Image (cartoon, rainbow over all chains, first blue to last red):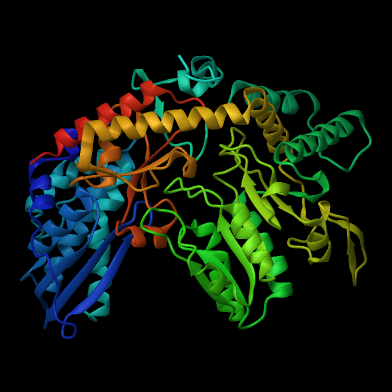
Length: 160
Length: 412
């Protein structure tokens, strides 16, 4: 069994206990989207304020497990102030980190190396790297990707 | 040692999975409300069926086809007797979900029109909500709901008011989240007094309590095999013969017909009218063996054991965790089964179950297919431990130790 410390890194627990960008934004101009994880009942409410080609502000509501909430917190902190293009690159990098590992489940359990998903120019995962260990716990991957899927939905609704 | 008529140590030995080791240690299986484990006798009977007399049923005259049919119908007879009904009123379905959908589709579409009222409860599993929501979208029927009171029982104060003009009252006999045992007979009598029929979701009742459907006074009753030591893929719907006779068929196909022309068909008598296509033959035979096993142990002994173990669990968890652990369910043992929906302070159920898993403690962390109830409880999910005949005090202690480790792991 993989080590729990791989899943619950200190930085994840910190984002869980002290979530960043928590709250709401006025709608409109912001867009409000909801994301659900039907497996476990996690809910994310995402407020997204897109000005021109940039994410002017983002806020997170809802409730869920430490992985879904910390992932949302890290995501919100990472995308605020970024251009839509940068956010999309970051999203691809994050999902690559999740899915590359997903496909190696049942293999030798070793971690895929960073270069596997750092083909995204300008995409620095930063704190989000802490979620790398989630892929050793396949049922939790959906917890980590919930906020990113909700963000994609938000970008779509914002028409960017 | 058991404090009652049930020898758990012996019972445990009948279940091969409970002796199986995962990560070098045996399992503490506390998820029987989701699905139960299977005794060796069920596995043996199913293996014997496939190995020695397997053939399709109700079709051929050769020896093993006749044997298969005999075993299959014998299982129906034993299952019917086990729940106190006539075998010709016992329809095999895939599970309770299909049983309720059968009623919604066949009886509902023949009898409900726009504005007709179906009364449900806030405690329902999605299986007893979504089929009626689908019918409401299609037909414009009105849905009303009995609320949950703060003591986790149904609020019956407006029961008669809600039943006014209703065509059907459909509710769960035992909540899969709270463990609450609902007053089935009382609810059925109240509905009948207002001219409504009664459908009972017995998924969490039949595995744990002696069942006499006739005495419960309902009109339809669904239950499922895999929660009562039987295989997956086999459930049952019981209905009153006069209702089933009058209902149109649900699925059409082979097995359910008497005659087919290119422009018409006639159906068989019940229960076969509702059993289109090749049925889950060996699963039915397996469920028959599960019923035999439960009868050997005795449902009274199982209920008694679960009451004693639930009492032990509530006391142990209460003493060790106090206010840091909330158990969403009645405290009165007479009004509850062995389902413990837990909320550990400051730790999400999903994280609870992750830490518990490192100690092989199997609980379900989710919304338990009852999202409206979770919203009523004000939570997104709970960690649910559910007890059955093969659980003992050591399992409860392992749960408490694992919860303790969880609380320490997540302590700031």
